[in-house]
Structures are given as structure tokens and as C-alpha cells.
Length: 255
Image 1 (spheres, rainbow, N blue to C red):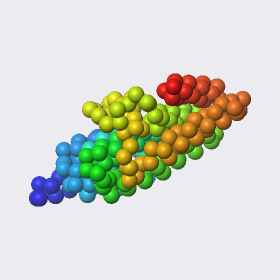
Image 2 (image 1 turned 180 degrees about the vertical axis):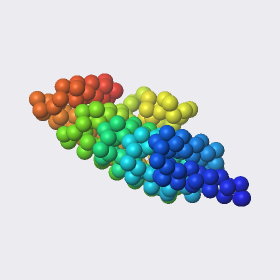
Image 3 (image 1 turned 60 degrees about the vertical axis):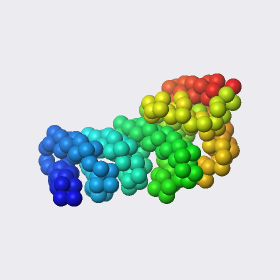
Image 4 (image 1 turned 30 degrees about the horizontal axis):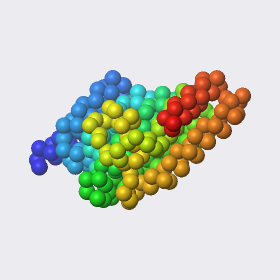
């Protein structure tokens, strides 16, 4: 216990340096050291420091905020059960004044979305229930999804909208039925998760994820893309191309 307390104190000291030091290089180095330290700790121990990580979202330096996203993704994925407290940062950074940070927030949030979806599916198949911490994470993912959908249809940074449209495409693919699937989840690693996940894994009365509702939402998401295409004359060319590509990919997978 003394060792855990010492490590937490060290992590807090490093985060205080990120907050208070005047040199950007020192801030970034301290944040990386804090990340490495948190990754070495048991998740329940590292979680004591998470509220102090969240405080860094107000840092005036863009590079610190961008690095914070990296820390949140890596540490949060390792400590999934404790990571709900970090999710507010992902949502806040979607509206960051620096579009690079907003884009990275979409990427990191998408990774969380797919991972949480898989974990909910596997947990139900293995244990016949979904734990409360995972329900809470899924609630955050639903808020993230709604925020991304809004970004996709509203005027704004082209680069950010392109990534939002990519999320819409991912959402459609995740929740579109593939008739040749066995219905049993077999996930070997997260790297192939978006190819492997299939909506048919949710058969059997999942307590949180209703496959019929999710498939209906996937259909409505395809309608969003179609409506965007109808208004393509008012869209930047790269956004129109992204919409067309997403529709083609989604339509191919739905055959």
C-alpha cells in the first residue's frame, strides 16, 4: 500500500508540473512520465489520479491538450472499469478551438466506442449480465455518438467533419446485419474489431443493446448520409466525396 501511495504521489507531482511549469517541453515530458507511471499501476490505484488528469483539459497549450488525449486513451483502455471519469474530456475536446485536438478526440472516442461495444457484448455472453460501470461507459458513448452526428451535419472544420462522417460509416457497419455470421462473438484482438463485430452477436436478449433498435438507427444514419448528398451543392467537395464513399461502403456491406 505504501508503494502505491508513493507512486500516486509521484504521478500527482508530475501532473502539478504540467499545470504549473512555464516550459512547454517540461510539461510534455512530465505528462509522458505520468502516463508511463499510470500504465504501470493497477487500474484501481491509477484511478485515484484520474480526476487530476481531467483538470488538465483547461491547459492553454494545444500540445498539452493533445498529449492529454493520448494519455486518456492509453490509460483509459487499460483501466476500462475506472475510465468513466475521463470521458468528459473526450466530449469537451470535440469542441476544442484547435481542430487537430477535435479530430483526435473523434479518433480516440471512436476507439473507445468500439471497445466498449465489444466488452458489453462479451460480458453478457460470458456472465449473462452487464456490470454497472460498463453501462455508465456506454451512456458516455451514446453522448459521444450524438455529438459526432451533430458535427457531421453542421458547418465547421472540413477535417473534423470528414472524421465525423467516418464515424457515421463505422456506426452503420457495426450495426448492419451480415447473414453469414454464426452469432457467436469471437474477438481475438482489438486491431480487427471493426471487421469482426457483428450485430447478430446481440441475439439472446442483451439487457442494454437492442439489436433491432441499433439496426434501425443504422438505417437512419444511412438516411443522414443520403440527405447530406442531396444538399451536396452546399458542401465542400471533400465532404461530398467522403459522403459518397461512406454510402458506397455501407451499401456494399449491406448486400
